[in-house]
Length: 276
Image (cartoon, rainbow, N blue to C red; front, side):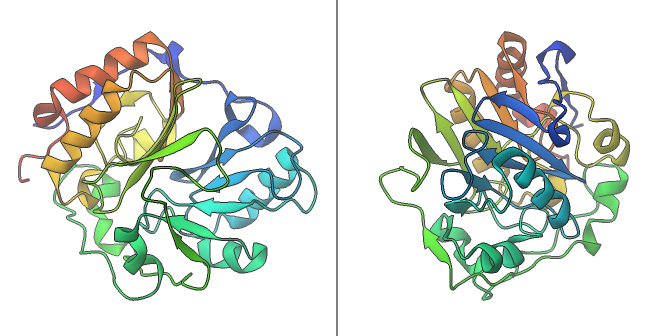
């Protein structure tokens, strides 16, 4: 039976007063938006054009995100770009509004483009896996697509990320075909999206309390478990110092790495649902 890999609570990055963001570095922070996180990359007070937004949260939280952006970067701040880990509903809730309001490029892996340019919806989720309330109501979740085709751009084949100097993208499929994660070698920071997460997203209770645990991608929306395993193995091999995920709190340090390696080593037992 799939289960979590508990993690040392001391590995969790603490909230700071600024709109309850969790700051991993002076230029890297996570903002919780209901059931999901958006990531802010760039120095505080950057104003316009010197920071990047990774993912845009779930529908109905865009106003909260804009308040966080203003508090961190300054009044009227807009990013140089929006960069997407993937196109599931809880990551694109504000994408169409923000792309139009800011008029900035939106970067994603080419395999995600059909879900971001209005041409294809994701396959239905499986509400029978995972056990918790969030899983049981998965059939109600929007499957897209959204349409930001006017602003949509492909991530470069060389692994670079436009307007995010020092970062590289890594193809980490499984949760979606075109899912990507972002890696900065200089301080070993990893933005993992939903390749793995730090809470049991299937459980409404776990989502509410955010108890730290290393967990595979949300079960109800993950179609390719072999690819998902390989993605976690790839990310664990990087030996990250800090991880920011699509769900759950950012974590850092040796205890986090130990839990991540256990997740990779025991992936089939602890992450894959019995019916997969």
